[in-house]
Image 1 (cartoon, rainbow, N blue to C red):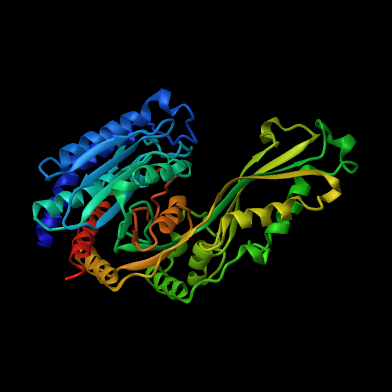
Image 2: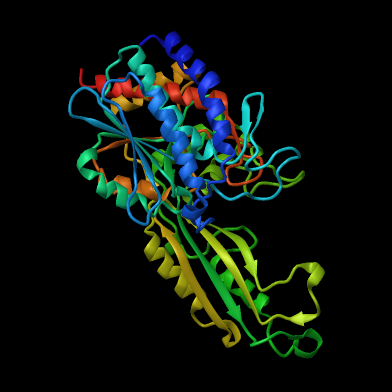
Amino acid sequence: MNQESLARFIEERWRDDIVPRLIEYIRIPNKSPAFDPDWAAHGHMDKAVALFEGWARRALDGVDGATVEVVRLPARTPMIVIDVPGDGTDCVLLYGHLDKQPEMAGWAEGMGPWTPVLEGDRLYGRGGADDGYAIFAAVTALAALAAQRIPHARCVVLIEACEESGSYDLPHYVAHLAPRLGAPSLVVCLDSGCGNYDQLWLTTSLRGLIGGTLRVQVLEEGLHSGDASGVVPSSFRILRQLLSRLEDEASGAIRPAALYAPIPPDRVAQAQRAAAALGNEVYGRFPIVPGLAPMSDDRTELLLNRAWRPQLAVTGIDGLPPPGSAGNVLLPFTTAKLSLRLPPTLDAKAAATVLRRLLESDPPNGARVGFEAKDAATGWNAPALAPWLEAALERASQAAFGAPVAFMGEGGSIPFMAMLGERFPQAQFVVTGVLGPHSNAHGPNEFLHVPMAMRICSVVACVLADHHARGR
């Protein structure tokens, strides 16, 4: 492969064709079904699908045998399936998604979730980095290989439309497409993060998740606090007590030993190397307020906290009026939405049982307490890299970035990764992405770092070429 020609091909495609299409895509409010239950009636998802489908057909025009299809199972979000023939009977599966998180408040002046703004290397707007860029990176990598007549295995690109809702449609499509997919020997997922924009980052693990609501009720209706306080216990105080069963409020450590899992030694070693590469960016990448100290002064421990240890976030509260509308009332109930991240290898359903028993048993003062687990997703720990893939990733990172590949566990969850790992147990996995420092997926001012996306595109092309050549 001619690396200079590869880089030139990719840069021209991104500059002249892909960035303008991503600008169109950002303008479409195609929120994931969890945030837009009437998505089918609103038509935004279909508009985004049509944009991507039309672009992919043009981008692969002239690539022998390549097909682009929109598959629609009844009552499910659509799936774009791109099939590019290759040499031999082997298959590579490449994954991305096109649905988006909701708007979120706090965007900078002149920006917004559906208002694309290109400033230097950054394309601001919802969905460009998470994960609209993926189809462009995958298809352009294949087109670049075709331009140089570089052989590769048959490649199937799947672009789903409900990842931000938990990918509940994906298993149905994978089952439906099973005869076409066969048994891929390599899975490339382009929906993850990076520690910086200076090298390739391979995601080695993803945490699991339990999401649910904890409700504490003490009254049938609110009462004057001067009348009832001191007689009727506060629902908010009882909620605090229950959360203290789960979390040490002084350290943030989760208390039950059953919610932990052993950290493999190789993951500790990788975290040490990642901490050395990132330095203070381990926590400096976040928009923390001046003077705030991180949860540890050991950068390796911070990375292990983020990737391998359980952590709690209270993401919503119901039952509390806003301060401007709050009278002197003892509230009848308090409900908290909990997000508990789990170690990658911990079974989420078993952890949900532990959590419910912990919170509901022996309620303080006999209050009415209920915990409802709405999400329980097991995490994922990547299989060991085959020697050919480890070498291919190093070559690809050096070629695209001039720097070595780095490895890091991600703190978020990609629920379908565990499913794909179980379905294709012999496959190798390349999980990477463009969500780096300050890119702020799901939040305000989300941006795509365009040069990073271009380099990821180059990496995909190089890895596909080495995958085909690995047996030689």
